[in-house]
Length: 351
Ligand SMILES: [Zn+2]
Image (cartoon, rainbow, N blue to C red; front, side, top):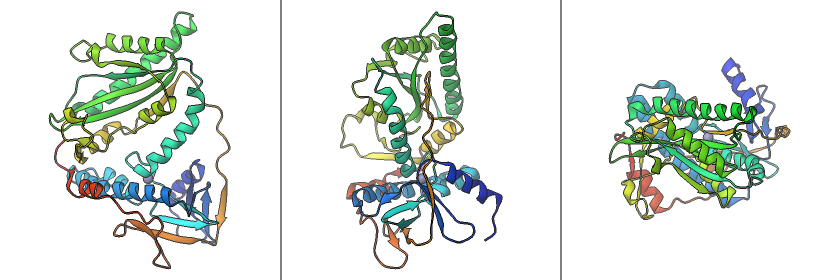
């Protein structure tokens, strides 16, 4: 096997991550795996993964079409990487290991990342005395403005944090402490985007400072004061789950005003989703400010396995099938509702 620099770079990256991962051993003496993997018998977990795999692949095929139509080959490549995420499982000692794409759009990787963030942040944020949740928005904008607004939002927010850190050092203000994530909704009826920040801060006063600073930088027409919200946080865990959703919502309601009705069938607007992902690329979606995490625990142990069972994902079966037999891993069956969404409700033109 000839090793390209790209392969080595990727291999190094896989080893250095903390989540479960694996590389194919370049000398063909087995498979190198990192982390604990998931139990082969955990059917409930595997069914969840199979569902995410199905949703992701269905979306990705449409996103590839969209990116091709827009003439964005680098995005096409990145989407294909996600298409192949967790394509194979290697089972050893009753546990499954696979290779992840780590892309933002991937529902498999997002669920893993979400769990990692909760594990890291929950113990710290749960100690905060009076956490508050802030939403910062501006007026909705068309697609062509999205990149500029998101770049601007992030820069502006950093300025606010820096200003109060310096004032705090001079004894004039409290230092702001919290986490923030950036997200954009899409309104298919108006074809506009609504980039916004979700922020959780340690104390109410910090929330008030942030909202005041935000409003002082926009006029009322661009950022109405009633649109900026401060809510007391009751459950840090629920709050964390809410704010670490990645930069875009995959399912969008047909009409945002009908959002209250949970029976409204969602539509997916992949061209708009591609616009949001493009505008967010290069930015951290989730970020902390004003505090540090404890030093990283040791990275997951590595081991080389030579005896393993191999399972490969079959899009027709919607499951991973053993390469040497007919048995499947998850026995997942999508609901008719999900089948309907994936078959009939992915729109590739509205943006
Ligand atoms: Zn992935």
